[in-house]
Image (cartoon, rainbow, N blue to C red; front, side, top):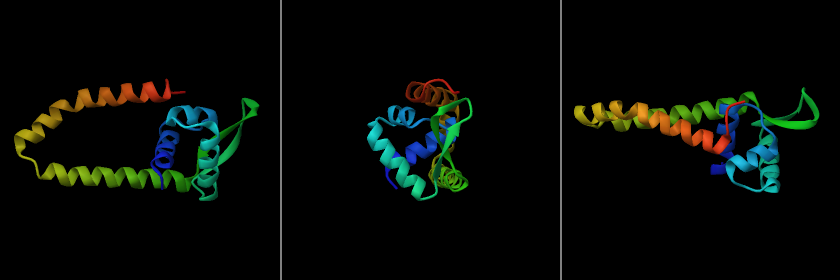
Length: 120
């Protein structure tokens, strides 16, 4: 799976259903490229298109159960990899990481807001 596909799935997992135009802006690709990407992910069973109940003209891209499972599995694999690496650190290095967590969390929130805009 491409990095853009994985990032798009992660965005949908974090923010919920989105328009293709929104996804294209968030992921930094053209709308035609995102349309192709969504079609491929749809054919793979990871996303589906649904009408927006509040605006019948709008189609939203949504994660399927398989898409949600994929994102969660990838995320857990990352957690497991970091846990193995952290196990190799000295106690003072682990303490330094723990002390830095609030700042790192804030940085991640700022980056997310910058890319995706406020949560809907």
